[in-house]
Image (tube, rainbow, N blue to C red):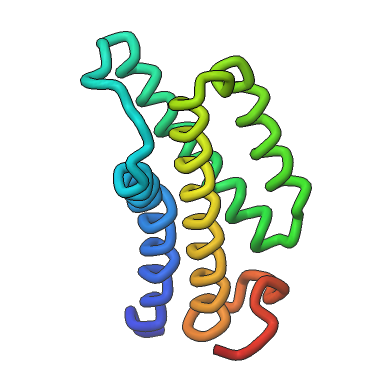
Length: 139
């Protein structure tokens, strides 16, 4: 078996890079472009909360992608519900609510884009591992 037969692994790896680190960059860029209010330089204690937020964003995008690929909408609903419950009190502040909503929606849309791309790639060039329910027509 040739080393070239393993090249699709690079496509799956690229999808993970697109989903996680690039997803954070996309969400930040959308927030910045939207003009959503944000306070100045964060204090050190807030900085650790931001790192936790980044990890939560990674988990959120991962779960949403898995939910979409496996056609398990309850996973997506649970992620959105948990995020909302966790930030319930803070949503009373208009500035934070805008920031939270724009970031969350950007993250969800990005996860959907990556999910569609990986399902398409898997069927077209990959190992045909994933269900094809997300994409029902040929691209």
